[in-house]
Image (cartoon, rainbow, N blue to C red; front, side, top):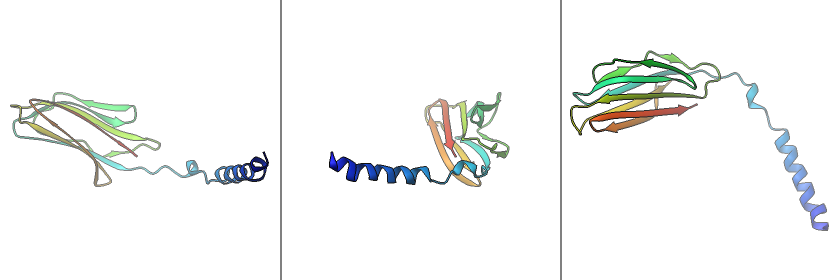
Length: 127
């Protein structure tokens, strides 16, 4: 019991003091980012539908055609925690491929790939 009162309790109080005095980072202004979503597929692939956006704010585009697609430049809304994309397409054969990139402030942050005749991939980046 003496060990508990002489060492353990003061150590816990000191630990609590340091964690209670930690600087609150939530007061810092939220930083925004510029985001571009890119899709590149192999020859003969026909992209079909895409859904993309921040958190729960999703934009869809249907009836795409061709083997490439690029989103307009998006500005991350203040407080958004993630950006994601989900896209599908059909390839001419089982060796077809598709690559999806999330580019944040000019730098590729996440990448996903799919292969086969029926192509689908989803990629999410957390800020």
